[in-house]
Length: 398
Image (cartoon, rainbow, N blue to C red; front, side):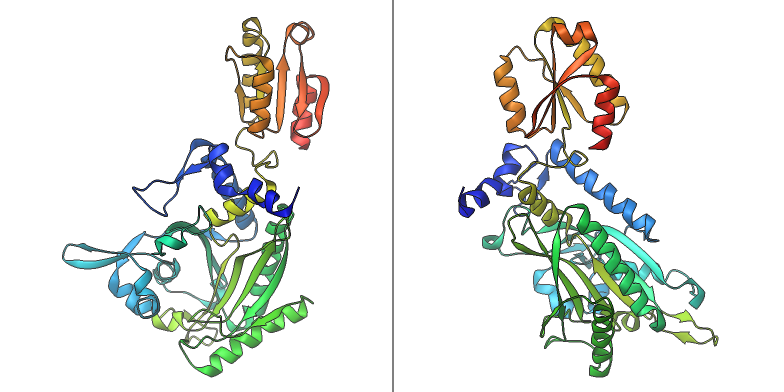
């Protein structure tokens, strides 16, 4: 198969439709609708993300989707980004849908006095944001107007910067490895429309470069492509076809704490500004899902698969046993369906394969009599008759 044919076969828009994962509508251009199977996939991905962040010492937060325009003027987003924002009048005041999550995290930090002993504070947020993209640039889940950023904002002392950035890089590597992604790294430096002093920018760029050097990570310099408030490390993951996708980012920010007067009381009992590390790993849940669909060609590993097991009874008299099996597997946390339609076996098997279900379980007279199931694994074929305990062991290993 040619590379072009393989790319087309993996197209996430085509597979999203065939596997019934998501849809688009002219009623909300660039704002995806998740179908039930797509919602299972998304929930599994987010639960994985939440578990990894809890283990890494993050606290999850949630901030409002719409806040007053003055907040975005204060943060600097208005000057640098207002042409991409959506607005609304409420009670004769101008509000904006958030294009980024940062200001909400600043307000949460400021809700009480902070001590140097509390830092680092690591806030993580799966935050829904809206950005106005040109209609001609919209592309499935890869380029959308409404998406969920897997954001985190770390409030740190100066002496904690390099250690915390190093911990972030550990977490990024751990998460990408779970999906079999290798990645390339670049350090993006001061853009033309930067905020703040050149001295702070130089210091921030040096800190990020130092962490990469200490880890022995190969990286390239991307001149002038930093965020307006600070330099960043960008991660480009490589999928199963060797294609590069920019996903993760780690950004160092000396500007926003001053804009929002975020302070902590240092060991000398003086007020001091923290430094903020902004970071995302998926980049956006939508875009990462699109990349996963294409990376796996829709053949998700068992833990991600929307439908993990499909039980196919040969005749109506086998449906009761199939339903018992479903109940047993579902009670152990597996996602199972019974195909009890009055269709030919060949058609049911072909449809299950087309839907890329990891395991099929065939139930007929022999299986009912022996209290077993004939198991077929995706791409591997027939595994023979197995008892329910053996099936559970097999699924747990997968």
